[in-house]
Length: 185
Ligand code: PRP
Image (cartoon, rainbow, N blue to C red):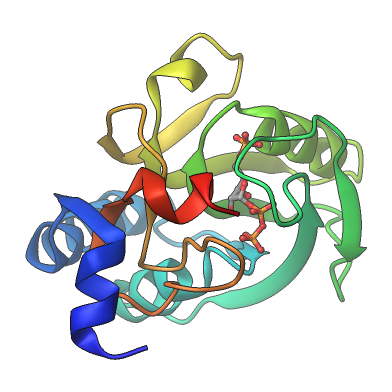
């Protein structure tokens, strides 16, 4: 897919590359302050959080461990199925650790709400959430997001880790996907 074809698939830019980069640096400064002199384990949720994790971890002026989980509730569709499956579990133990879950988007909130409960049950000293994007539908959901990037409108968005059928993850901004792309699928 070349640049012209990509542009045809996209609607408006929802968050620019510059906005993302500024916000991640602000969030990293808060995280750094809150976890000063404390253990911190970043848990990234594959695959969407890869870009966020890469930028956030490098914006932290300290050493930090990273571990990864893959869970899926979407498959190839555009709506959450409500069933969360662990596709890849953490490599390490959470006992006594301060866990910060790093996630790209809170949509229905199902994934994070399930994940936070799951991680809390493993004996972590604390479990907090850092999430780049939140849709209106998730505002009501009981997910304690300590560090939030942006509240965004209820559109199907792609880029900066977010995909549609595994495409568009490497866009540097977050953009709305034109309805003709998923309506023809
Ligand atoms: C997406 C996204 C979140 C989840 C959010 O993951 O990365 O994990 O959906 O939706 P929810 O709040 O409605 O649960 P997906 O299952 O598409 O996997 P991916 O990260 O590999 O794209």
